[in-house]
Image 1: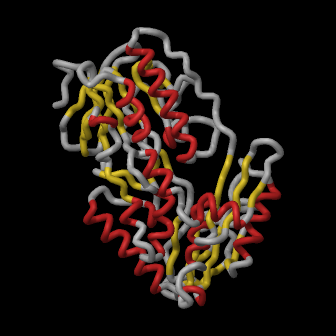
Image 2 (image 1 turned 135 degrees about the vertical axis):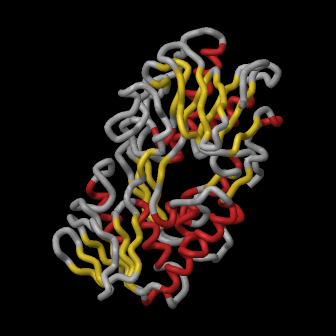
Length: 379
C-alpha cells in the first residue's frame, strides 16, 4: 500500500498524452521533500499512438523503437516514481476529501490529490496490450494480417481509417494491388467539427489513391462470411478478407467509481473549467476521458496538463484554483502515407493545407520527435 504516512501523495492515473505531461510539469513545481508524485500506468513506457497506424502496416523504419518511449526522463531530476498497474476503482467522499485508488492487483494507493488522465480504449490494431512481449506479438500479428489480405475494409471514416488507407497505399508494390474500402456512416468523411469543403477535399485525395469510399452506410457485423463477404446495414455486399475497426474509441473510465453523475451518458468525466471533477475539488481530470466540447487530440493536452499542474500547486497552497481551460481551436493533420496529407486550422479564415505542409508537419515524422522531446528525450 502506498500510504501518506510521511508525505502526501499526488497520484496521476494514466501515463499517456496528458498524464505524462502533468507528471513532468509537477516534477518541476513541487519539492520532493514535501510531496510524492506517483504516476500509475498500465504500461512501463509511453505509447505514441499516431505511429501505431504506420507500424501496424509495415516494419519499415522500425518505428516501434522510437514510438515506445521510456519514462526514465519524464520526471525532472527524478522527482517522482512509477506504479505499474491498472486501476480497478476510485474511492473518495464528496467534498474536500482525500481518498485512494485500488489496483487490479489489490494494492491501494492513497492520494491527497488525484489526477485522472486514463485516455481511451481502442479496437483492432490500436488495442495495444500492456506488456512488451504481448505488444510485439500484437504488432507482428497485424502486420501479417495486412500483408496477407487482398480485400481490406476499414470501418469508420475518421482520421484513423484515412491514415490506414494511406499507409496501405504507400507500402510495397505488392500492397498496391490490394483493394481498400472505407465505410462511413455520415454523408462526408470525418465529422461536423470540420467544414464541408475540407471533408470533401480529404475524400477527393484518398480516392485519388484508389481507395473506395462508401458513405451513409454502416458495418454492424464485422464477421466475414464463409463466402468471403460482409454486408452493410444498407444491404450492400462487400468482398473482404480483413475488416479493420477504425471507429472512435471509448473513454477508459470504468474504474471511476465515484457518485452517480460524475460520468456523462457517454462515460466521460465531468469537469469544471479548472479541470476539477464536479463535487471532488481534490480530483482533476484531463485528456480524452473528460467531457468537453472539442475533438480529442493529444496536441491539446499540453494545455490541459498546464492548467491541472497550475491549479494543483494553487490548491496545495490552500487557495482556490483559478487557471481556467477555455478550450482550443480545432486543428487536424491527416497523413496520407509518408509524403501526402491534408491539414486544417480553424483559426483565422479556416485555412487548409495540402501535401507539402502536411507531410512536413506530420506525415514524415508523425510528431515523434516532438513527443520524445516533450517527455525529456533529446529526439
